[in-house]
Length: 205
Image 1 (cartoon, helix red, strand yellow):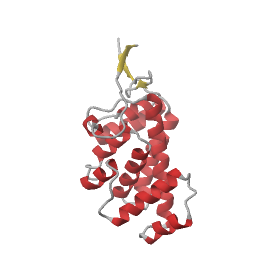
Image 2: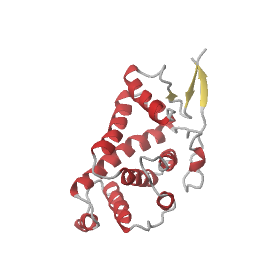
Image 3: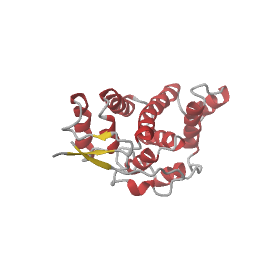
Image 4: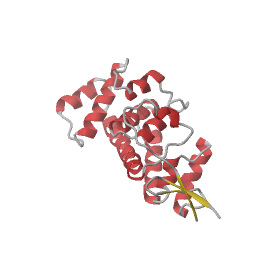
């Protein structure tokens, strides 16, 4: 008898073996590159449309975007924090230590604790990202000009939309399912002002 883990709301957390065929490529990529398959990936795998859209969006922003990998992780952590997604803030905090992103610990802590960055350009990046999210893209001329004046480009303003799109997919999916935080970065959820109680259910199949 196999056992499949579930979220608190009984969403399956698939393995590569139990996932739909069209989700397997993305799941194998996570296993190969992170030596684990995050619970978010396991959750999304039930919808190949969602998992592949999320995975490809994240690859696209890193491979084709004009924001640095460090800036991408800053924006996505900012959006996850604003959306009060405990899972994603913990995950982005963990991945900030990855050589790909090279984030300073003080910058991630500034996001988690609603503090200013020491780098004024990053303050502009956060301010504009939040303006785009909160105003649904209808930023004021003043907000847009402040972003450009800080040294960013119009292409990077559009790249921020891509980052937000990725976080809408992951943050909203986590909140619907109440995705349990992986043991690998669960301690990084501690200290956040928002917190949901989550547990993993195991069922027979």
